[in-house]
Length: 199
Ligand SMILES: C[S@@+](CC[C@H](N)C(=O)[O-])C[C@H]1O[C@@H](n2cnc3c(N)ncnc32)[C@H](O)[C@@H]1O
Image (tube, rainbow, N blue to C red; front, top):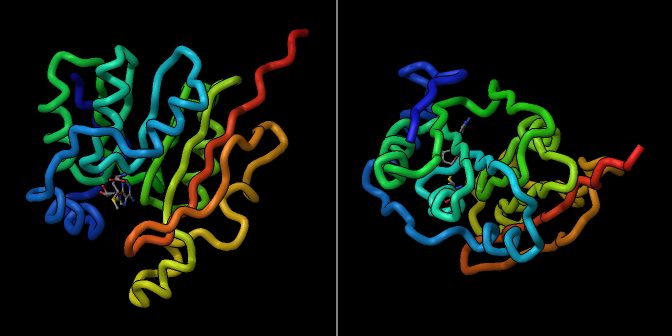
């Protein structure tokens, strides 16, 4: 396990403080997110995995335990410390970064995924980081979440048609639809970057 600082947020970044407070006491999941299972079922080529806004999810651990090289990014250093401790001996790199400034290597990852985080520019950079033949998997709240929780900010919600509408022709949609869980109005996308054409 390594802990590489990159685009590190300031000590007083409000999101860092807010999420550190939550991740201090929350339970570290040992199981992957359902999104990770769905991506696996779709078929992930060999190669590294990038999880954005990983928090305390078990997804990064799940792929690292499979022997994949995993990079897990979050603004909460507390979550990353806890994840890193659980990943001792595994090829899991934690990156403490504000995703708004984070630039993943283009075309590098067999799978890029995020759950319950939304930012359009981050999503577009994530799509750019998917290798030819690799997967992009995203699951997060849609605007209907505001009917369940009116204080939930619209900026954190997918608008109609998103995020599929943000992808270009280079992606093939494998799964795209709404998911309604108790108290959560979500939407899931799984898309594959078309393999490079043999030239
Ligand atoms: C709702 S939690 C989701 C965690 C995990 N993906 C899951 O589904 O259980 C949102 C996560 O996004 C992280 N986050 C929020 N703003 C961020 C930012 N600007 N840059 C990086 N991570 C951020 C938080 O620290 C938190 O871990």
